[in-house]
Length: 148
Length: 148
DNA sequence: TTTTGTGCAAAACCTTTGCAAGCTA
DNA sequence: TAGCTTGCAAAGGTTTTGCACAAAA
Image (cartoon, rainbow over all chains, first blue to last red):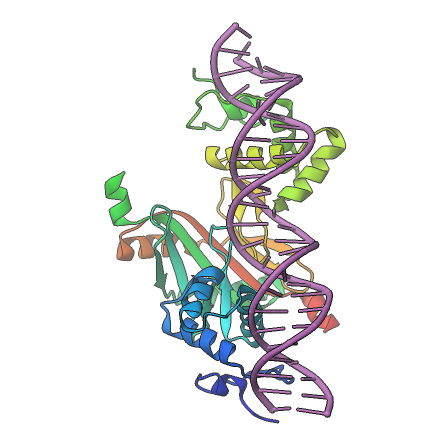
């Protein structure tokens, strides 16, 4: 079976591995759709509430199970900001990083080409095969600094 | 009162702000001592177990409260690796970053001078005052790749 | 029809909090 | 002594799991 799971979930047909019989359900389609339309960085509970508006019988455990599957398939990425819970965003072509305001919680994304070089340098020096690079910068945005 | 809290906790007398009457207790001294001697990256439970060997009546909530105080005073930093709980390490002079093996969990520290420039660039472009920069690289170390 | 996924409820974790008793300054 | 800190136990928040029923292939 060479079906592309992602395609049936409404994606662009990104090739996913480990396709060992997972099924395309209305819940999974809905959840991935919301993640794709969102500006990113949803946490499980936000996703749950958004999805519940369209499918009221949805349960939170389905959300967690779907996120775990998407993560495993490489469709979404889990982010660990300075909070107790995780945030999720759809994986994109271009690697990007995060700038988080400690005052208002706003998250700004940025790209920084030098991280490519950093990965190469560190990989060579430490003998690692590096799969992910995440840079988080924390500080205060202009508005929050004014309010101080 | 110009006592330096950190000094009485066995440190080098790093100046700490917000010194509004906190007390130096045997528990706090013990916990900071363990953090300082450790290779870093302890989580609350590991710290608790290590400390309990020396002071069996210690409670886990004291550990959390001490970590929260140390964090507030800038003596330790909280790290968010790809796990559900946090890790803590003593703040050091030199900024450094982390390379984590997804296979065995090993954490390797590295320094990378270009992050200084990245902070400046991003700070200028986004109007942020940046306080922390953390770079996490994930992948597989040499040994774990051989075992695959 | 077989196998996987869902919803519900309960459990498992990690972390925080309320309170009486203990300790520090 | 006054006020901060502790230990204990209980509560809070997030994530996982067991199980019977529902849905997909």
